[in-house]
Length: 348
Image (cartoon, rainbow, N blue to C red; front, side, top):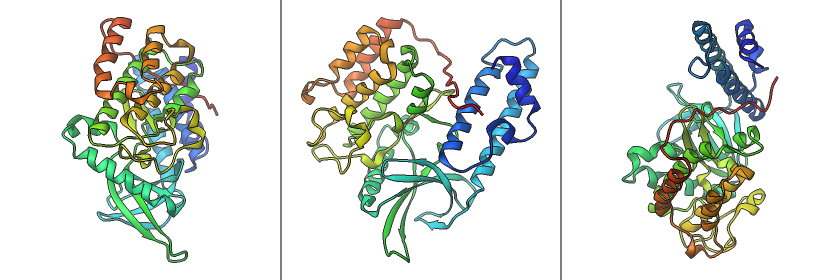
């Protein structure tokens, strides 16, 4: 669709479902809606295109944002479920917003109406993984870098210990800040760019990922599950959040669990104890996946150096921060801000 067609589509919409389809709290429709929103706004936003009628573009963008907010609010109000009581507040359960490897993520609202996410393990045997996430995020939040690194991690809002009166099972539940309305996963990004990202777009993502790993490793935690599904991207703000901390493991320990579908991305020491080099390997395996054949030869050599079979030979995340910046200077020279958009892969 060209600019004129998108403008006419937005201007003719009388209700949110005209643009985004039937309101639903299920995962797939919400993700499709979010991708469509980003596609539409990337076409008509006055800051991104040259239009003869900037006022028309601004008005259409405002209307698009309004309908987007209405769709999300209507979806959040559906399937209202039980109330979960945490240490700091009460949370009324909404519908599922994402499905993880061991947990379901549900939208919820606290007593003030603020949106949060409840991370509930599907099996009570995964309670220890929920507790691992609590410990990791707690340590990181109280690190000396919390002033800037807070933006790279989910925020632990509260913790719930829920006892099911019917089954007698206890489930540990983490209450996290709600990132579902603003972020896309790298899996979404890869679906929109099946032939690989422009290396200049990957550059800012990878720099932020390395900073995230450096903070976590300094606090004595290895993520162990650096996959496209666990990395959230905010296209407009160039934001990066590393999620999936239920797999977090102390160096020297073995992971409680791994992701079966991601085994090709794990390092050769899979099955043994973890070190920070585990994360370094997976981060650069992910680099190769996200760039595909578009990866520059020097960046490919950089990635291979971080994926050596002997974990002791891989650089640490802190050292890689400077080395990656040097590589970017060599490849691209002076840095400039690049607008990043994610085309929709699911049109109604």
